Amino acid sequence: MSRLSVWLLASGFLITGTLGYMTWVGFQPVTSPSSSIQPVPVKETQRQTYSANTVVTHSASVKETAGEFTRLVSPGQKLAATDSAEAETSVADLCARFLSIAELSDPSDRDLKLQEFAASLSNEAMGMLLNRLVEMKPNASAIELRNALVRLWTGSEPASAAEWVMHLPGGEAASELLNQVAITWANDDLDSAVNWVDKLPEEDQRKNVVRTAISYEAARSDALTAVTLAAQIPEAQGGGQVLDHAVRQWAANTPDAALSWASQITDQSLREKLIAAISVEWSAKDPMAAGRLAVTSLNAGKAQNDAIVAIVQRWAKRDPQAASAWVNRFPAGTLKQDAIENIAMVVKSQ
Image 1 (tube, one colour):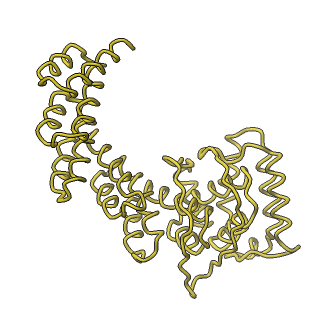
Image 2 (cartoon, rainbow, N blue to C red):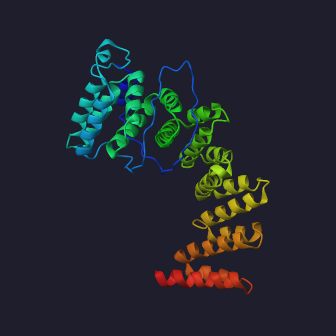
Image 3 (tube, rainbow, N blue to C red):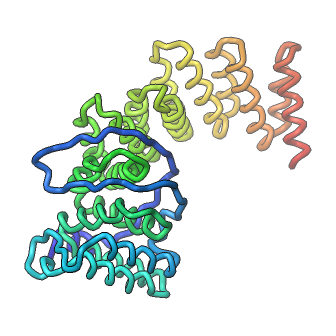
């Protein structure tokens, strides 16, 4: 029994959904002469959306996918395998198995059969099968299947899945699948996933793609790791947005710790931006403390005004009288007027 079979039987696989969707294109591949898994050209021309928790949804589209599989291979073409039984399995045979799974009417049964199907493949066979999926002109079923298979593979053999995906040529599919591997690995074993990205060469632009995916995943459970990764991503590659998300998630749970970390940032503009974000998140638990932070730690200007108005809006939903009493202590001016107007709008909408 393969390692994937054991893993599925022991833990009961639950297909992991992604947190969100991001697109990166144009990354240069890193090749390794020693790799046993070789990529094939990507021929995608457009992206189609899908539900991350759905394996296959349209049997008609699935038939098209199976036909595309058959077209891509010669009759009798064999997959690399670790046992003699699998060595007799051709890509066409795998297409037929996939089609029979896709046509199952019960989604639970269909997902289980897909897991069993994945468990029957060695690392070499899985890599070759996924290469065919990447090579195909994408449709919804092909995208769903390949992403589900990549998540299954990463769940049991993350290093092998990562090696395969890093040898794909650049493009939309490669970016999406790299994201799938990074998120799944981080969800299962964050420390190992971070160790993987740390070892990637800095000159490889995909390193920041992986950092982004892992940071978003880590923000749910390990805020310090999330912000540490996010802080290494250049602004041009979305680093500011990733860092803002990580800090907000941290502040929602432990605002004092988030504030202590953000206060050490030497870049004044970035420090104030993050403290403003922390103050707004803090207001959900302690609006008075959040307001005090915004008033005392931010310089007068747009960042401070926006933070205070956001705090007042949240506060007014819970206790409009307390929010009004706090705002009434402001000196006359645009900020006080904006805050009063926002409280009035909140009260009117309730």
